[in-house]
Image (cartoon, rainbow over all chains, first blue to last red; front, side, top):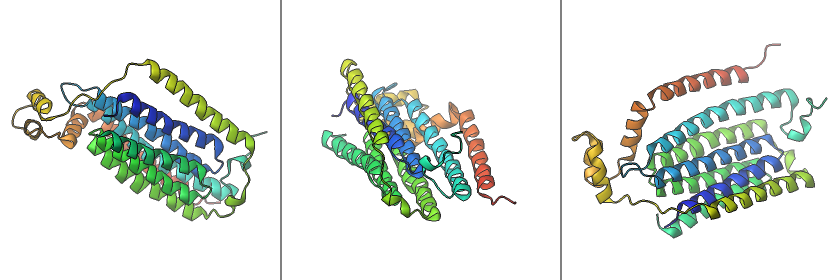
Length: 105
Length: 187
């Protein structure tokens, strides 16, 4: 049986991969995908806490509710973020973060 | 969930996640995210969160990643493959990730470990007493099944009714915002 620490370790590894991707990659769409990976890593730890902390013999459904809300908000966030990326591409013709330097002064 | 299934799904998930960062082509990255989410859904279902596992496949792998693929197709990104990466962001990213993992291992090695409490027929039947007798939830629990979707619906529409409706408003606002953002600006 996998223990709670195993799940937390795997979730932390996924979060670390997402974090590294956000820093390393320059394509803004891939950066956005790595943000989704980090959100999903948080979801995994929430679900494992919900399963390993039973209330009255059932999994703690408050944790699963939080995951449900996170998934829904993430879907809305992806839609808005991708629309912003499309608008950005229309005005600048690029989606590379190192070419978007108009705020540099 | 048996140990080998846990390691199988977490390996699929982690390899998918690493491939997202490693691939240069955004389409390959998007498909790796789908692989990663399928492994994650396997882990969710192994943790008896059946509804969330299915939602993960339907919403994330299905809707969100298809949206990503559509945008990649619309923007038609071809020439970004030949770009050379600088050394500094690579070192910073890997260093950050390693620092995070070392910290995590340090914390986890000191916290007491926990084994999953049993969810067998006996403990489920004992939990049936907390629900109104005769309802579907109580009947399923008495039979030794976990009525995951019923329980989530019950929690959602009793304890979390107001956040749920606010979420509906949020989705409406996001829809309107996306339409406004993607409209052609009249010059």
